[in-house]
Image 1 (cartoon, rainbow, N blue to C red):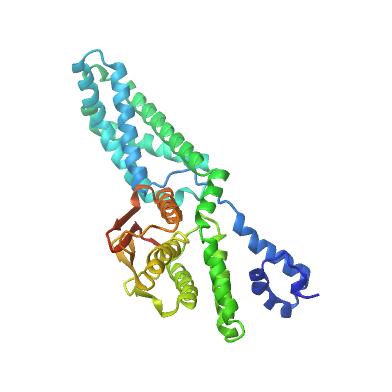
Image 2: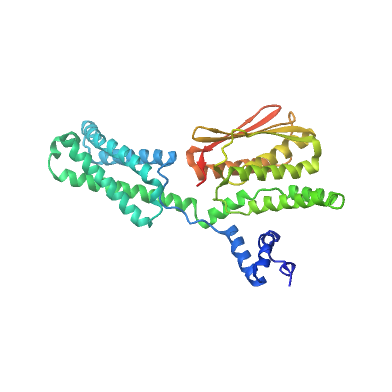
Length: 377
């Protein structure tokens, strides 16, 4: 029985596992291993309940929420404006050093947190913050206490308050993760990611059919490029891929469009300063190029797309520019959906550390993306 006896399996899976036939694998083993490999397409990554303490958005939310809780606590205890000011003054004297030192230590140990059980991590963070509070409170002496609090009970009260605040914060971040990462949201992200337009599929198939007899080798390469594109479109939406792979995929897409449009389509790649070890969300570059072709080059009849990727300190800059016809109307609203989907994915993955800007003039269209420089491990 040949591999073609199993039409329900994706052709790419058989291409991956057919070499194993010569190594003592039977068809049953091939099917099992192919299904295991392909099952990863629909997997949903288990959410990380603890926040990323190295993320700027997490740090900003922590600072704002902790100070808001402190203000509310002082407000409930104050009888007059003078008393409120005194409560804020003494509270902030201890709160700010504890907050800054806690964030610094959590920043340092952040890579090791998710290696353990969630509740064990929570207990460890609570104990860490409590010890920091007690240590700074002892070190500061009477500086961190109001005149009516000069007794040993204040140490216990400050430790309990810090433990309650950190528990509230971790509960908030857990709730936020639950709100952003349930199964329906992961499915929504996958739907946002799989935005290769049907017209591209039909155009590519027609282009392959036109050359399949005259140039079968080129047609085979084009079909392999299409398989790579749609395999990436079905991959897990929350995975990060290497920048090299993303650029290679974009080049494969452009090769398919060049096969259809010929020399009317040109692309200038400025990637000599691109970091090879960078990670990027999948299918970010390809939709930008597709929009540039479909809404820029096709209405003009010809043109050149410019792609610039480089490292800027701790960030990665991606820029795609294309000419546009003056006062031209877009074919559909699809390009707006695709671009907003990229913006939303970047926001969900990187929070406030990602920057997405679109600059449009009468004769050109620029998309600028700035994301944290994440290295491959």
